[in-house]
Length: 326
Ligand code: GZL
Ligand code: ZN
Image 1 (cartoon, rainbow, N blue to C red):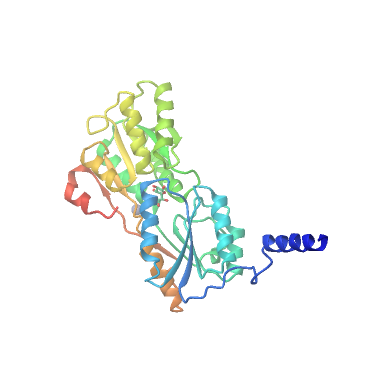
Image 2: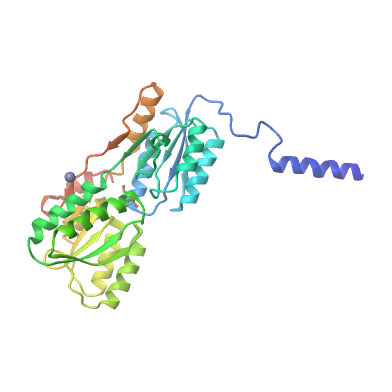
């Protein structure tokens, strides 16, 4: 009887440690689908949701793909473990939307050593070795900031401009570029002042919270512009401003927002948002084209930047807003 119990325990141990069964070092994909592992930042904003939908819409089985989609819930360590999992699963390609610019070298070296091309979508990474990624598809965030700065110059001229700066996820390329564009412009305009920089982390809840804290301690402070680094921050900021007695609009505070999703454009048409700077989340097709280029044995562009514009209420119509895909 004792021998039988030992046998059972050993078998149980072998099965749980995973070294029983096939090689145990990853899947052997039977079908001829192209296996794509996607590590997404999270679902922090409307932009992010639209970005995820654009990826899922194109990497489908009928298009010849098996999509492995991992949501990192805005934690870099979850993205790093997702990449390691994709390597174990022997995917054909990895698509990474990096939450921040730093901290990627070692895990991307592991992907390169495994012979898996990495395509960066949306934000960029900071690395000395750009062979760690095959291609990058995203936005020029400095360019976006320049559109906002030009609007501020045209609107305020030489008048004093007091600015509340709501930043996005600190260390993300979108935050770095949109912040640098504003800070450089403030350095060039002696009549522009940044009253405070608050971390809104690209979410409505955080933006509302930090705005209320600031407005409670600086009651009645004179504000001309609230520069929100994405739409969801703008929604939180407007809520807080109105709670503290401010009017958002041509006669009051000018709220500037980045992304220009449908909700934002509606608020812009209602003149609650003064300027909506577009940031295009529909990057799925470009990512798929990049993979098709690689499948054909060709070399894709290292960097592809999507065209973007900006909107004020004067040139918006309800029909135009409803026709927009996000
Ligand atoms: C921009 C993207 C930003 C969006 C935010 O390309 O990285 O992250 O502006 C999103 O809405 O959270
Ligand atoms: Zn420019």
